[in-house]
Image (cartoon, rainbow, N blue to C red; front, side, top):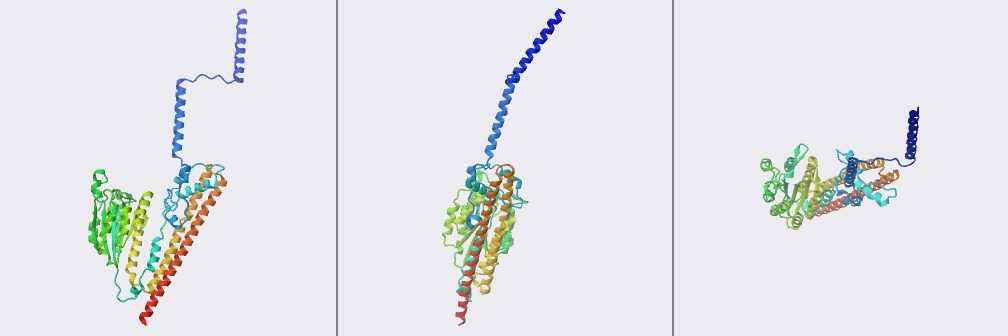
Length: 468
């Protein structure tokens, strides 16, 4: 019994001490065991992984500096039709909506106190993503100018001289022309378009074919060979299907792009047709810029100043946005035009437009009042059709823009008030674009009417004087 009492007393003492310790731990910071070295190392590695993830996210984010550097909203028709093509053109048949949504979430969130300038910059960045290629009205302007460029005295004269139409096609045969667009290479598509174009020209038109970059490879060791490959393979003679195909079919994509040299030699090709009654036009089909060290802009300026009156048209075939701008600079320097063709149908359309010009020029000196009226009416139709095609690009921009806004709002990047204001901004921009389209259309229609009235009166006066 004595020993049992001692044992019970000891148990009570131990339990009491345990309770006292528990109360102390409940009231103070719990006592924690010191972490092991392995736990510390795991924690450090996890922190490093988080930091790396944050760094990667920060690198992928679109900065305000980039957003503010976006081109301004178009303020003229020139700005509108030459606005850079965006990453997600709203008019594309295979529009990547999920890609757009993912992209806009890389933009910074708008602060609650964002300024009106912040909102405009934010809006124009999204706007820039959605812009597609737009049709340049300059071919229509040239057609209007041609309506009133004729000499009425020669139109009425029985001794009408036929105009000689000379067209040179310069084909880029660099290695990149071997890239596929759908089931065919760029070269195969270009060859088919050239054959159809040449076959459709007026029977007495002279045709020439120059090919450049068609030898060697894209390697540095072959650069000199490829850059010196520049040949007039056909012409200048009226179209002969067998002969043209015999030189065009064997051409395959090869090496580099000596654009400047091709432009210079093309000008020399046409020196034999410097007479006043010749119409000389060069069509460059290229899928890239100069890669042989030449200065295509300088050569273009020199060609423009030659006595040979030559129109240079450059067709950028499936080129990147920055290369498109460079090729346009070359065309501008040569006093010509530039157009984008991103697929087979667009390339064919560019040649169709050229074909129409060829036939216009062939009939230049044989217009009567009826033909003049026809030209005037067709210009009217072209003007209105151009405006309508341009207008049809706007609904897609607005819809995709608003889809972006709702996506941003749903992810708490913008508030409802900011979404409403951004929606107002894009509507203001599009309304302004439509106004510019309408005003430019009315301007072109009025000029076309004035030129027609003047030509009609001149032909009428000559007819009356000859009759008397």
